[in-house]
Length: 401
Image (cartoon, rainbow, N blue to C red):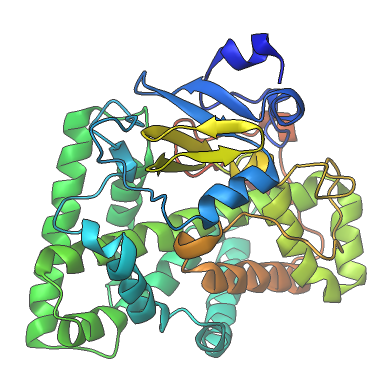
């Protein structure tokens, strides 16, 4: 790599000039400085990885975890050590080593592809109802508020046994917990405390009257402490709706921004599966990325990462790697194979990826069938990104039909 590039410290996250386009800096970094120095929102320094092979290597290495509690780990946000990626000491054993493997086996039973296939009819019926309600209210409409937000919330609340009527509170709590810049440390702490208090009361109620849901099963069958149960429920509720809500909106903007993409799907519905995978790969607004604390010396490419280094794996930049994806800068709806890293890889790969895929495919199927004339009600350059959110997204997705 060029010495000047290696010495330069970039502000991270790197801003993009357009809603759908990646920062121009990504391509330069992959080619000339794949291990780059960056300053995080906290002011601490980390290293940024942008190549597919490097990101995959670090994420797949079981020695490196996402907990940033070591004294020499970089802080992501100024609110606390590790910021939104940190976990209390009482719950950290669920996130590392054998404890994490047992946690994944226990919770993962509820997120298998087979279970998701069984949930598909209910998800489809809910999506159809939400679309009907949106049409009844008239156009233009915000597809995010009308469909992309309520659907994943309903699904994850149903799985966990949480009243869907409380979804507005989840929206605020998750936005606060996942935002690096919008809220003060006091506001973040207050939101976390409110969320924990709510879940503690819910767990107490389910101990007395268990239901046929994930949370009731965890309460009765794991022996986990209350704090571990709260942390698990909190994590699943936030991750289970926030990422998919935003991805539905971004996917639809990608497909509608170029009418030829939408028309091609209308002509060939069998492309829905590969189109969803390509939207996941092509997403240039995926958010912060995945941090890792390097606990042992490791060589990445031609660079040695020393013990005590914090790295940020930029999944979206890696998914644009020209050495892995032919025509990486183009959206190819029938791209096969598509080894994107949108859900991560290794021991900490997204537990809910089968659920996310089911929801994305279902939404796309329903909209193609019920609203073939769907189009954006604003220019792409008029759309607004959500600033500061760990998970990238758009404030609204205005549509008409």
